[in-house]
Image (cartoon, rainbow, N blue to C red):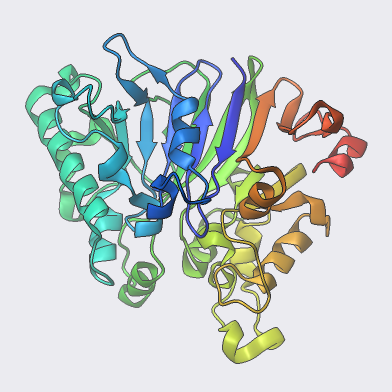
Length: 389
């Protein structure tokens, strides 16, 4: 099985599917617009595309092995109740044919911090309710919980609320090595955020304001060879988070942040790179060097993906044309190594997909005539990296 990463065209939102080479699947966020469910509308039907990539279990239930919610904004969880089964797995209904989530990856911290700044949408409330149900079952049954009842907690909760369930808690800087309790060596993912509350109350308030999303750096096996693709994803994490991560890891562990593929935070927002308002300061707005450094740990031939609408300099941020230009400078001014998911859909009428093999990372192509698209990452030649696109 070829491992892959697929970015679905969901406008300003995130919806990314990782398929590992043991056929396990991990969905990161979702954003299904109402128009996408309308057969008479030309909005990309991302759920039909997703379902075409998933398998069914012995009971006929379509499933993902894992679902990671980076944070509970609507553009990262919209459509959950309509398309995914929530509640006990034995209550799944054939007539509804919703997707079963074998294991949730969720953070209680991002829900607490989100509640300080905005009201949760119905889908986010439904996710939180389901997460609480699964945690309660773990407290009651321990590892006896079955697929459809499982959860991994991304980051410790406040005030010791997760101290009694540390077996399913991944602490900041630790590695996630299991998906649905399977440790097959197909990947490892280091958790960088959400960060625990610190001694600096002013900074903690800023981190809350900046949506302290789950940030993970995956190292993915390809063709049986470890670490063929490093993928950094961080939801809507903004400048204060990235600057703090660089202060924490830049001297001793900068390589932890290195990547072959970066999902540009917050849909290519300028506010992941700068404290300055571009609308107020224009080109005088300054990049935060710490945040930029955290987001600039590229490996050979690395690419940056903006999960956003088409980037227009005249439109409001996000996405930001100024951020796009900064990301292009990070990839050595190679414009073909910065890709916008909406542009791929407009040009090719399909999601943006990368396959991960023993040769590295390759963008899938629409026709055989374009098969010269080259590999990047470990093992890619300089000419291949230049040809990537």
